[in-house]
Length: 406
Image (cartoon, rainbow, N blue to C red; front, side):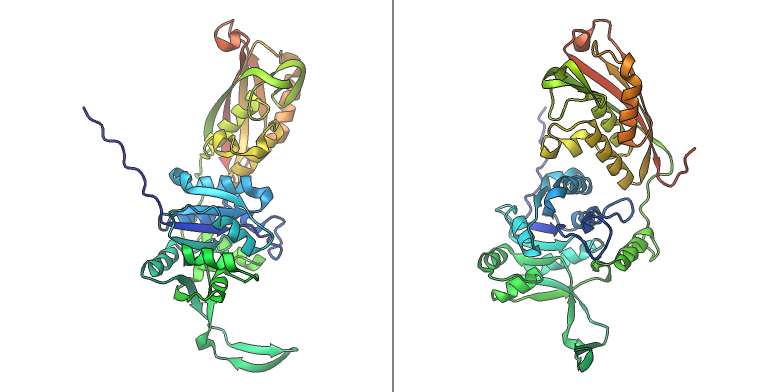
């Protein structure tokens, strides 16, 4: 019997650079704007979900250098099975430098590049489609716009000088789309910073056509903008609210590490001087890693490899506290709180009895939820019985954030 292999996904001819490197000082939320929550999802994740609902495209996220890992998590959650289309790069000191960093990561076969602000998180996919359609029809650059409806005055020193004819004005939005060759050339010849990419391309001689924008594509800049976005997402304007299921959810996790690492053993969040270390990308703490897998599984957020894989250098050598605190953030961002976790260690050594309460206290503090630890041996059977390594099994309960604690 002959089996026909599944068709490969077509190679995108479009790339979307999502700029999420801003500090968000005017928003005053105490974090970079793109990582502020709307409804259990961040602004960035909301923006990326809209991007992935549009035309098939490579997606390049440009994030602050210290939030690349967070951006990668949001991007992979938004992309789902299309995660191979996503990359994340660190931004620069200016918006133009950040876009240039994103442009350098665009694949060679891409013909059209769209540049989009993550802060316009509710931009409908149809706007992306209109920009792409204009480029495919022959435009070298396309800009979504809305008509200016307010009366505009030109003012000097607090005095109105003259009225401005609003019929010739338009409010620019994103995504702004360009032929790849045109945007590359504009960035190569840039000798000044511009407020957006359309201005940069226009300064280099490109002609910008306009397409209709959308009222939902407003930029989240101030606390009032954030509140407006939250009302829209919650359904105040007729949109369906996104909410987690009403019932508690259970997940299981397991992890295995062999002895053979450097230094002393780290297990269950504790250092065990004199015990052989476990081998791993981080500290090899099988107990903490099993907890992470169980909690993420319960919340439907993938597994430890999704968020803490070897492609995340910031977790090289990291201990349990970093993993568990980050897992708690991910789960709470998704609209859940952690109820409790039970984890069992299978190993000949170390002996847990004397330090079990200490391990439970350290793990519970890092996770923000009760963690119960038990330990057993396998009566000499298997690799743990032979003293070759450690295995751990965990069960976690998560509860929708709106459900009161018992």
